[in-house]
Image (cartoon, rainbow, N blue to C red; front, side, top):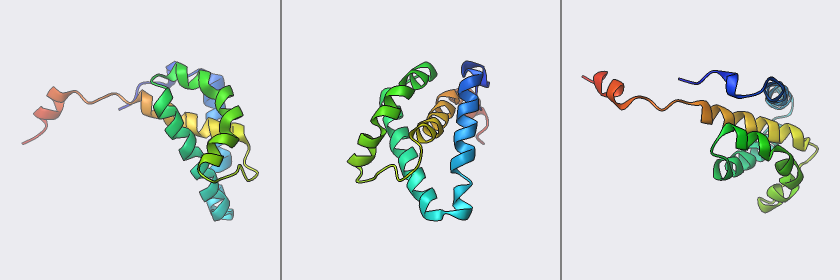
Amino acid sequence: MTVPDAAIPAAAMTRFTTAEGRLYPMVMVDPVGYQHATSLVGLVVDDLRESCTDIEAVLQARAGLIDRLPEIAATASLTLGGVPAETVVDAASAIRCRELQRVAPDPAAAAGSCP
């Protein structure tokens, strides 16, 4: 179950949707490029998981992550390889925001559903 998108500004949601729309269809035409792009997204998601515990923090981290992405990539022996930093950061931010929107299941409700 997720909380409504109300906590994420419309402009950010548009960036997230656009970024994912650019990256994920690559799998059909450029599987190697897609794998590279998703590796970069994964690195940024890991950074966001370590540093951002709420949606506002994710949104505020954008500019810094865009600037640091070449460095983040280099720590994993990667380069940007033509993938726009903004696209990588926005796709990663979308993932992290979805994670943060998840509502933990109610333990009492979960206990009631078990035989």
